Image 1: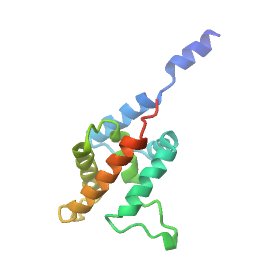
Image 2 (image 1 turned 120 degrees about the vertical axis):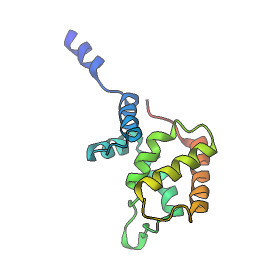
Image 3 (image 1 turned 90 degrees about the vertical axis):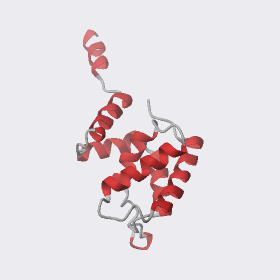
Length: 136
């Protein structure tokens, strides 16, 4: 019985795990493959809903449903969704989305396309207010 209590106290909660991922992102460390899988598992439907928003705006031109290419923004959704809980307002979401697309597409002219990122971030913020709940 004591062993079960000890095991439970050592379990990592989604919040502990989220903090570990945020630390990696803040230090510009690479996430590992299992980090991405864990993000998808923990956020579940929220991950898919955010993916749908990115696919709708498709700022880089990666979404090609006719060829069943619908998950090309997995990395961006992963790094955005773990930070989304800290975004307090629309401007925070705009800055977050822009920062993450610059991280992943440094060679792409994100400056030129700032308008599409702003529109997409506003849609993400609206979704955040209406549906997003940080996993506990």
